[in-house]
Length: 81
Image (cartoon, rainbow, N blue to C red):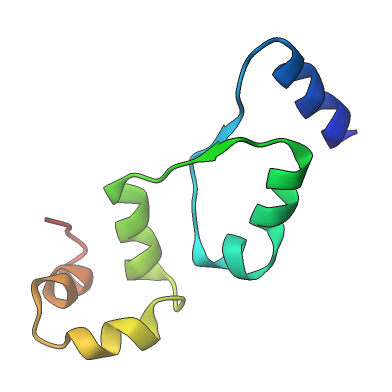
């Protein structure tokens, strides 16, 4: 069903883009599946990325090395430069 709907949109010379790139989407294989279905682009904006860093555990390993940095201070305060 999804493949047919995406193919119909592509057949109208339109492109489907996701607006929610996440580590979970990549690691789970869902992004590759969506690509295979015909989704042609993906983006994220700083607000969405900040929310992922601030609220999720997906970036904890990397952010442990950021101690004292602007990114960590902003992550704790919930703001983004």
